Amino acid sequence: MQELTIIKIGGKVVENDTELRAVLQGFTQIKGHKILVHGGGKRATEMLPQLGIEPKMINGRRITDAATLEVVTMVYAGLINKKIVSLLQSMDCQAIGLSGADLNSIQSHKRIVKDIDYGFAGDIDAVNTDAIRGLLDMNATPVFCAITHDKQGQLLNTNADTIAATLAANLAAHYDVTLMLCFEKNGVLSDPKNDDSVIRVINDMTYQSYKQSGIILAGMIPKMDNAFFALSKGVKNVQICGTAKVKGEGVPFPIVRHN
Amino acid sequence: MQELTIIKIGGKVVENDTELRAVLQGFTQIKGHKILVHGGGKRATEMLPQLGIEPKMINGRRITDAATLEVVTMVYAGLINKKIVSLLQSMDCQAIGLSGADLNSIQSHKRIVKDIDYGFAGDIDAVNTDAIRGLLDMNATPVFCAITHDKQGQLLNTNADTIAATLAANLAAHYDVTLMLCFEKNGVLSDPKNDDSVIRVINDMTYQSYKQSGIILAGMIPKMDNAFFALSKGVKNVQICGTAKVKGEGVPFPIVRHN
Image (cartoon, each protein chain N blue to C red):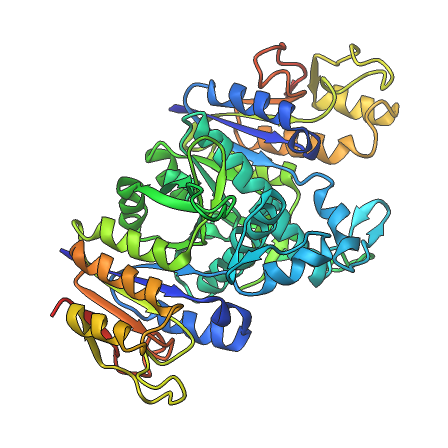
């Protein structure tokens, strides 16, 4: 099978022009097929009050009302996505920016309301692997923003880690997939105050024990769950790491494994 | 050769939800390959002061400074493009939203400064027909916003009529192309106060005489020039018309012809 590397970069990278260019330069050097998924950063949140929209958060999570959805769509699918695509094109990478609505590539449903109504947040139902494979066959490099749709005309705000992991899971039957979920730390740290305390390998068992001992905390748990989900669906390599890895500067820690 | 219909819709359509849905519904009914190009509407202009950016106009034309470019990129490539794509997808049309940066589909250069510095306005140099044909071969329907790039990492604000006409001109060697430049009137009017005074056919000679007699005025001249440019490059059918045509309600007036 052909190799496919799927890399998710977070909002912190997107906000720093020098860092973004360095990461994209590293990304273009990766051999084989590749897909980039990018987060949103603070720009949308900063813009909300300027546009007279009150940011709504519950337990630190954004509530996406209709007005907020318009702003995140503008910023994620417009401003950030096209900036990344134009930079990649300047590096001779045949990038194509996508939301989940484009080619119906990622279909989701509006999150069911249980305790909290998250508004226009999407939970993914299906990936159009044929369409994405068609683009990869054209030697195009898809660049996904964190917006999906419900195929009924509704756009939905969707977690970028989940998009990356779900793409990886759905494409694992067709490619040898490497998934890298990048974030601002060098990796999962055993001591949050020490950037060098990266845990080199995490497996199902050590993950449970890290969770119980509180070493892996709230914000990291959904990311880890996405990593293990991808592994369970046949993704060959899963790494949670800093962007140094993409720039070719670091070793791939930590690797997430079943055992 | 296969048929390809390229339709440009203006900002007025984009701003009216009911009208937009009706036009898109009509668009999906067109047989054969198709491409949609959409203008921007007033939304970006309205947003500028909210974001503390002073709109700059010279002789009624927008000057795109760096801050304005960010806003038009957000609104055109993000908000409007993804709204149209998600609506088309809900109508079972395999739409894919594109700027000129995506797949390097439309490469342009920053307009050379003569009397007026238009800022980040793009004049088109090249169309990547291979990439667009690749998408059409996948039975995808490209939806272009009015943003292009210079392949050096710079996005550029570009006239939507010119994009539609240039796409038509470049694809005319591969398809039987029909180009429809839609706008808010029923067509080119011989009496601007009478919506029924549509000129049914305009050719090179009558165009010159309409211009000289002042029947075809300033705003319409670039649109007409785009129409004649497309004709000169082998585009089979060129129409300047209202959106009624797309909705299947009207007859195709006016047709623009060489003679």
